Image (tube, rainbow over all chains, first blue to last red; front, side, top):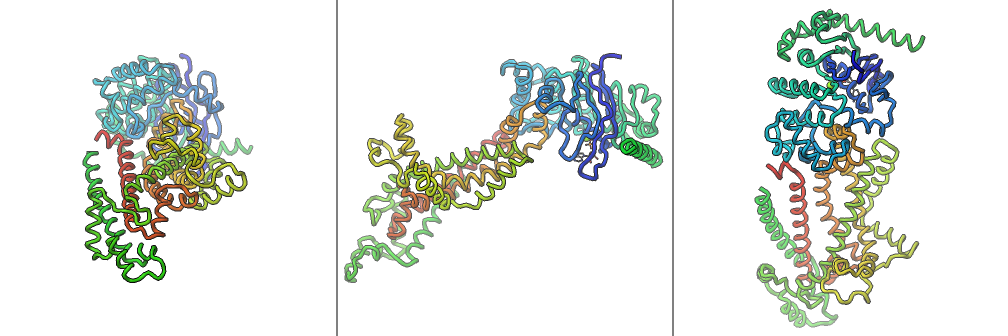
Length: 296
Length: 335
Ligand SMILES: Nc1ncnc2c1ncn2[C@@H]1O[C@H](COP(=O)(O)OP(=O)(O)O)[C@@H](O)[C@H]1O
Ligand SMILES: [Mg+2]
């Protein structure tokens, strides 16, 4: 096995909003150098909370209750704001979910693409602009000059997501976190964006944490995957293995509901009630065990 | 598109001014008291009074009086001040620069002070520092300009006497100016000692006018900034590794400033209205101070000219604010 880039160990989080309800239940996953790891689960499963914990942007009403996030031998959860700021944008970048809100409406694309390069890579204004241009060409934007001189509202959703991907990979980070990067896009655009992320990732040897509610999407792009249910990893393994022989009934149900994973979102069916019941029992047993460990 | 807006606003402005002209003209003649009553000596004969009224054209029917006045106004002749015996336009031109400099200084101070406190409060959000700022600001919001004026006098004239109480400039320094914009001219021509003297005179009236506006700016701008700071694009910029201050200035400020600008425009017209009492308190020779004299003396032509001038200033400020807000919004600029 190749070198580890990111290791999440027993990450737990609780919501301070409703009675310390657990949001993440001892989540562990590891991403190797150059690997794409998918986190799949229904809405509210805690996928974004994992991403936010890595990026140090946990909301004030959520608290990390335990665990470690090791990146390059350092525990990100133990870093000071200043130390983390040094890593963000240089070693770790984010492709956000919604390209319509991810841009500052009153700054040109140019400014928003080059500021990170200037701050984190020490580029001059001119170098950064040239680099931004090259990056846009890399994500197959035909008229990069026009795009650079545009304001966000002048670009389509798919175009904006390309720009965001270009900006994220353009910082030459070691890890890119993509939190549902295609959810807000048309199905046809989704495919292009997935191909693009995969191509950039391979070309730059970037590790990617790819978050999605859609097993079909994750199956397409990820080397390994974790299935998350109510903040607990219920299945983990290489994508090929999991698809061939899922160990958890929930994963089976997801696969059954969505057999054509080459076609995201085709014929989604609800998870059978007995599968949900089994999952709930598993979560309850886990919580009992956690309480015993705490008090015993 | 912007041009169409300007044309529409200019037409509206003219209509508004016409309305103001009618209202002030009629009001002055309906309410008791007239300039002749203010200047006759006791025991003047009815014939004397009638002669005086005829001299000032006050014996004509209201409609004729209005016609004569408005005809003059349209051709730039605002009549002659009854008490100052000078052309109203000339009197206003003499006094307006003092008020413009005062109002501009107050606006600059209010924006700089209010803006910095709002930004500081945003950086300190959810800390004790923010609570202190909010607490002080809610007190400041309740204090009007003339109370500030009195407090400043107590502080800087009586407790620590470092500022001159009245006037615009030390009279011995008021020589050799080519314009009435004393502050601007002394700065442009490099006479900094003179500028300093003017500023020391302006300090208290400026602060008295600026502090209430600063309080309003702090309240609204801080609120807007906090809302902007949780937007996705600010989060993304934070993940690029930018510092908080840069996030506020580069990402949030421009998107948050719209409502504050619009409100500042409205509040700035209040500030200009406030010059009337504040200039009076500090015997500052601007149009606000002049307005009080004009009213006391029932100087009809001067009051009419002043009201039109105030109306014009209000309208120009509002148009200026609208254009600035539009110019700051790329959606409007590149529609
Ligand atoms: N700001 C917040 N404050 C409190 N609880 C939150 C907050 N954001 C999310 N949560 C809770 O955390 C859980 C997981 O949310 P999230 O990680 O966003 O899920 P996902 O990304 O898988 O849809 C949800 O139950 C949600 O209610
Ligand atoms: Mg999410």
